[in-house]
Length: 126
Image (cartoon, rainbow, N blue to C red; front, side):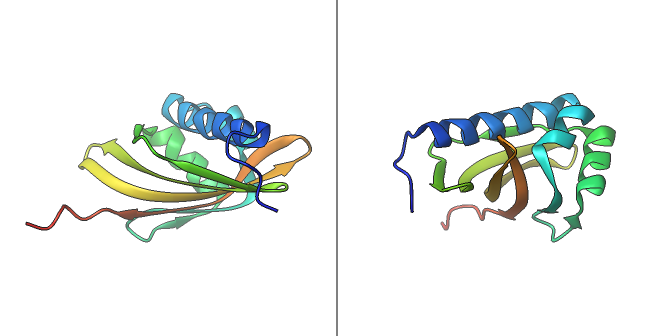
């Protein structure tokens, strides 16, 4: 059953999502360990697929700088949530506009990301 927008669960997922972004930027390994599920598959827009250990190692090396765009949605179905939104990834290669989907599952009272996929957004047609 889809829970209503603005539910306490949606607020929790949004807080977990924000905590993940902050932990990735700060290279906070302990928080990343808690926020990423052991089974997470972290897919990048270049088709690189990482396990939890690989994703955390990459964050420890380079950090992350994600700028979220307004208008993200969170749909909560019991103990599972799908977060979808647009963002810009700022990195040495440049600023990359992305569409992103994350799947979060509530385990032991805490939300963990178990899947993440991004794709590059094309510039508007001229």
